[in-house]
Length: 116
Image (cartoon, rainbow, N blue to C red; front, side, top):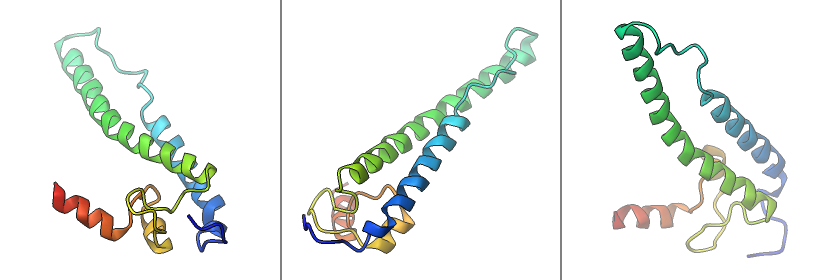
């Protein structure tokens, strides 16, 4: 990895703030609703169960997003954000702006897709 100033360095504080905001939104979105009533009649039980199941499905998807966000924040802290996990080349700024949790350059991402 180069020690010289990288194109993305001036953007790191903004990226960190955006990632933190995304993280906080996920946490807020996944708080268990206090008004889910499963103690009433059969309809309440079905509706409550459905809400809990949907919340769990969202939570699983959000868990993956949280892992990526936390990894990206850690990389910012370690000055490795914007470096491809595969080839260790710099990821273009525009790619990072489009996907803050991106960890591979386009070439490595395409190669990974072909392997799937």
